[in-house]
Every structure is written in structure tokens, then in C-alpha cells.
Image 1 (cartoon, rainbow, N blue to C red):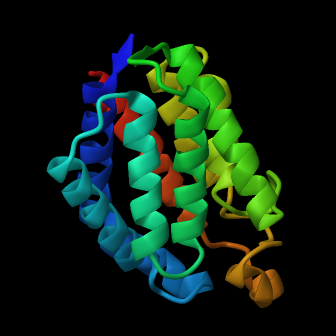
Image 2 (cartoon, rainbow, N blue to C red; image 1 turned 60 degrees about the vertical axis):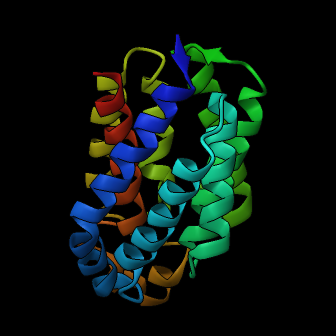
Length: 198
């Protein structure tokens, strides 16, 4: 069973991963976006980490809700509302339980992903974060490792895709051949989840 401490470890591992990979995320975004994905996420998760340290929530759902709120209030661009929606909706789906199972987390992530899809109007194959998140949530029913592998494969699979949503879609066929930064950061989210489970 996964408690609030597990979710705090997950968010800490994610903050570290974003800090470590911010340059690469921004580089990917420079090719097909507006070159701020890494710095925006870095700012947001740093603020979320500070908020979690100041007043650590005592349930898994509350950890995700607080992180999501911080992202929405501190991150510019599309990534703040999208990641904020993902985590807030997943947190809401977990409710007030003190401990949740991996299967409950998978179900909550699917609820968050559905909210992101609705907000952004995207679907798998559109070259967005959903291309990493949807397969990861499905694989999470099996294991944390399977989820990370599915997210990484999903992110890599965006390279040959034509972007149909977001700023990258303005490039048309020039978006082909570049890995989507949102799918890449989503793979970091799931990779940090596996790290927290070790």
C-alpha cells in the first residue's frame, strides 16, 4: 500500500528529475515549441516542493492536490494547467484514503489523463504528453517498472508523429522528427514514480 510518504518521495524524485533534465526539456521545446518547457516545470516543481515541505499533507490525494495547485499558480504556458489538472484530478480521485494500492493509483491517473485530454482536446497519436501517459497508466496495473518502460517508449514514439495540438502543431510537417517535450517530461513523472517505489 502507498501512503503520503510514498507520494512525497514521488514528488521529490520528480522535482530532482526535472531539475536534472530541464536543459534537455527546453532544448526539445526549442525545436517545436517556445523553448520554456524545462524552465517552466523547474519553477513549478520547485514551488511545489517548498509547499509540501512547509505543510506536508497526510494523505496521498492531498499531496497530489497541493502539487497540482502549485503548478497551476506558478507555471506559465500550457504545462502548468495540464500537469496541474493531471495531478489535481488524480488526487481528487484518490479521495481521503490514508493508503492506496498501485491499482487505485493507476485508476486515479486514468481519471487525471481523461481530464487533461478534455482540457487540451488531444488524443493519443497527437504528439502530446498523452502519448506517454496513457500507455503508462495502462501498464501501471502490471508494475511500476512496466509503467516507466511504457512511458519512455510512448515518448520516443512521438518522434515520427505529426503534431496535431499545441504550439508544435503550427509547424505542420516540420514537427515530424522531434520528440515531444510534454511526452518526455511525462516519462520523467512516471520514472520518478518507479524510483519512489524502490
